[in-house]
Image 1 (tube, rainbow, N blue to C red):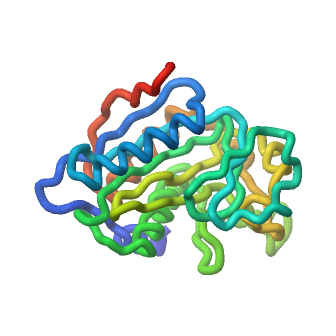
Image 2 (cartoon, rainbow, N blue to C red):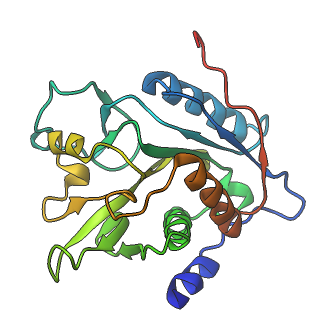
Length: 243
């Protein structure tokens, strides 16, 4: 726990003095993926132009697969299982669905730190801090992005992925973000090779024996985010066209 705290402090990513708090919005129900991406692209453009405030937008999606810029066709094991969305974020194939908290993070790195590696490290620290509040030791890996947990119950060298990271940056405005497995249907990950990693599995908070609700996770995520990125302000969720 001490090393995780030290990592979190080292990865603080606060904005300039006097900056507005980051807007914090939570969507109700299931958010369509294509509409979410269109909103993020427009918001990131407005942030880069200095016309909108930074925003963290928490959503759940209907079951779907997304293909990042490094996705390999052979890693889509079951292409007819769920809709597949090609997306501009980094990374490979990822699953999104009910019970998984997706946080889309739209920040202005010009006013924070224009350093993508440090930004990813800050996102990892955010997730590690969130998991620590549930007594789960999340760990980062130098050779693979995301947050991992050791599974001694499955074997000495076994570890599973509990959270994924995939970002895109345009004119130092970020979008896309992170996903944390709270209580998704883990069998849905079998239609892809998640993030191109074949030697490890996936897990969730509930799979680890932690009976937690999404609102409880959201509250912890907000506090852990503020520890790394600075103050937030709760706002209404974006209203998407047709919804």
